[in-house]
Image 1 (tube, rainbow, N blue to C red):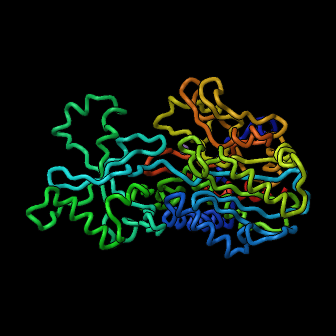
Image 2: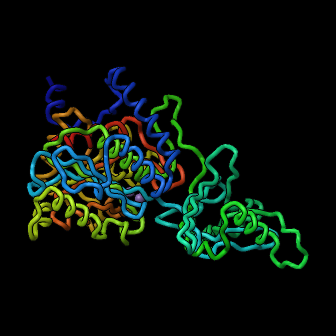
Image 3: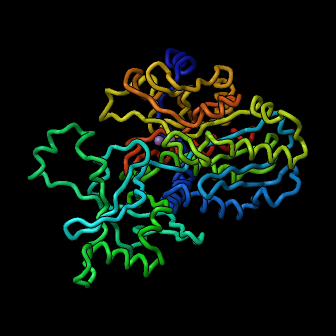
Length: 465
Ligand code: MN
Ligand code: MN
């Protein structure tokens, strides 16, 4: 009797892996194979958008510009400057009654090259870097690094770079001091141990064979780049080259229960929501998927969520469905719902002192909802209303999806933010809803395959409402 009362009244904090069928387990493991492939194929926002555009077209999505008019069931996408993307399936209901949005981001913390990156010192050639997003700098030294991005010449020609992923490719690294000579460095605070100005990527050591030249190794590198890509040193000024960990995403653990890989914040939610959209048909309410850029540096700029590009996309939906009239966009947002699909900090037993175990999320316990994020006293938070949280809990419960409602860490310790507030400020009901991870923002983040599949199921269920 006692146990039954407990079952009835208490939140069950049981691992998702308990009591699941072999069939469900197979589905989880199969889904994660596709996810791992995706992580290895698309490591930057540009690569994710290229991937998503291709897969969307294979699933019948077309560029919204190709439509004069939109009908129920039409599948459209809009690519914004190759770095962010919106997709939609037109529902049976009018847009003015609201739309169902799921929004993730496809940029991840990394190192960018400076505008004039190449220099030579003591017969080594280096690229200078400027880190992007919140990183622990010491984690980025002495690991294999690959180079991704574009260089655009003044004639408009675009050179795409991807070096360090194929087995036959070279990789790069940022060197660190040997412990034997690191007495002073080891005394410093962890955050000061590696200085940003020392995060220089080692890229070469063979001198160009010309005794009259000053910096022979630098010239040799430029010569190699010129022969391969037809570029000069000045062309780096109009480039976006991103340095990311070169190691591959893999299954983690003897039981293969987790995924370790770079950039799971937030490609785990991007992939699961995008795949849920690919499998979606005939929705009642128009379904919209956002893959946004620049979240890690504040969502600013014309590819970030703060820009008006998303309003433009929804206005185009209104125009092409023939619904539009003055100020209708505001009404659409006021009646819309959104899942801000971004990762949460899972409880790490090794660093348990920063967590409130009663209110933080655990890997393997299902999809996580953060009613609010923010830092120390909810500063900067979008706080989802109780009514909306209840609505979403009902969606999850009737679809038998395991979920947890959590905060990120202890109150006084810190916090985080997502794109949730941006849509909430437009009037949308928004809740953060994503996958808990360990080692967030490190070169090798960890997520549970159970939660990854839960995310896919959650996003499907939300759009089918
Ligand atoms: Mn994120
Ligand atoms: Mn992040």
